[in-house]
Amino acid sequence: MASSEPLLDQDGVRLTVDDALATVTLANPAKRNAQSPAMWRALAEAGRLLPGAVRVVVLRGEGKSFSAGLDRQMFTPEGIEGEPSFIDLARSGDAELDSAIAGFQEGFTWWRRSDLVSIAAVQGHAIGAGFQLALACDLRVVADDVQFAMRETGLGLVPDLTGTHPLVSLVGYGRAVEMCLTGRFVQAAEAVSTGLANLAVPVDQLDATVGELASAILAAPRDAVIETKALLQGAADRTYDEQRAAERAAQSRRLRALAGLGE
Image (cartoon, rainbow, N blue to C red; front, side, top):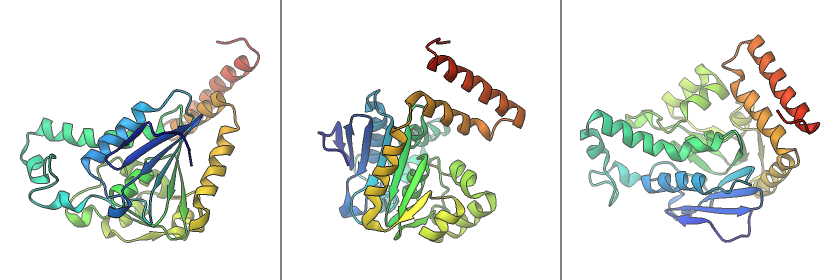
């Protein structure tokens, strides 16, 4: 969706920037964009490399699948060359193990920054870590062939890449429990009806639809978008009266800014 030279192109992650729009592409279609610690480090680096002018970030996957989840080699005794295996991690101390998982999560945490709006364009399989990466974004537009599934519990693990909080927020506790514990596929119609996805479109319209959504967001003044996003992000943790007060404070800032009065 952007034509400029990549700011990052390594370990299956490519970052391109076109003015206020950045695109992060999972770029290992031969492996259905399977994820590894190296990919997670590259995703975290993509967030650090974003220029300050970027307002919208689109996350997409090359090929037929958004991301098929963890690279299966991570489940083998030898793991991935140059990376600690799951067995190595299990044998580490509590602090070291916690630090390792926290490092893995860094590639998933920056997508909801208050100064950005992130949109996941999801087609085909979005399994496990792929599902959680889509959940890391503010918005999800899905192709009609999408198949979400949270498979970690069936493998004896838990979803630990920041996906549990947004999943419960979007679909509710009961549905989240059922999806995670059964590991079943959630397809496009259900994704939209339960709130997992904002809309579903034919696969050949996915990029164009996401581009239109990004353009609509970019058409609004940046500071108003930032204030509105912050209001919505904090709403669930505030009481009704606290939210009213937050609205008043945000609107006061906007009115003064529009009048050229500053703070």
